[in-house]
Length: 347
Image 1 (cartoon, one colour):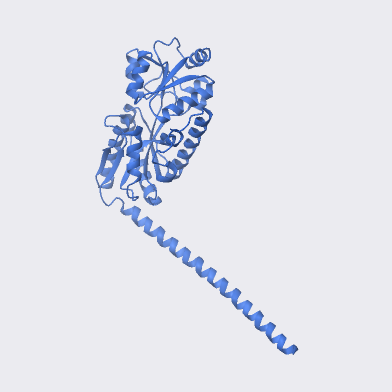
Image 2 (cartoon, rainbow, N blue to C red):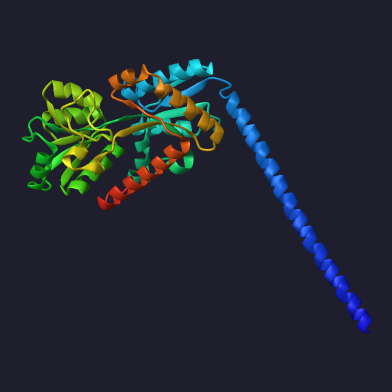
């Protein structure tokens, strides 16, 4: 009887050993297959990136022709067309403050053949709109920055201040009595960030575009606006507006050597230049995104591009998809915090 029990224990022990051994073997096989599949997928992705592009590429500009973004898009398209030996076609799809064109790109096939160039401030949409039809984090694949542009903090020439420090004191003495003009979601949130940073209170007046916003400032309908260089400089030259400062990370702008950066006025938190970048639809393979980013880096490094882009009010700059993605996320968080503090409800 004891022999029978002993035999059963030996059988059970052997079965347990065999099951353990088979589990170990299966785990090793699973790992091996996973590695092989990963290697194969990486190889396929690398081949796809090396062959990209295989047909003409569309570069969507979500604004009308003639502006600085359109100008930079056409320079990039010309350069990449030569480099890739495939046409890069600029397509202007204006509307919705830049939203229409970006949504059109996001719905395209995610293979790198449809791209968009737009401001990184599209991260502001979800803070101001209930249903923008686009989730920046979910629907877009950031590729690279292509340029940054300082924003001019400008006042009407009728406003009796000559510096940013003077304006802050002037506004603090008149809480709720001054107004600012804004022309986009990001423009509104950037000025609200300025209000929060300085502790001043102004009434926001939205305009349908920068042309209307600039005109309102020049007439004195509003006392302050944040304008692009292209909009501000002609009116500065005409004596209709006065530049107090620039939201520049790199100090003073070569074309405006007498205009200080915000950090010179003790506001380093206003280093919020306009950031332009190239995006692809979500799901675009990372290797293709990296290839495009590398080629954009080659574009911005071309010696003759810097003066051409400076004439458009842009400073050439590039980064990696991973870096640009993180920038977009951080910008979205900042805009969300500003909107919440300002008690701005999405509409």
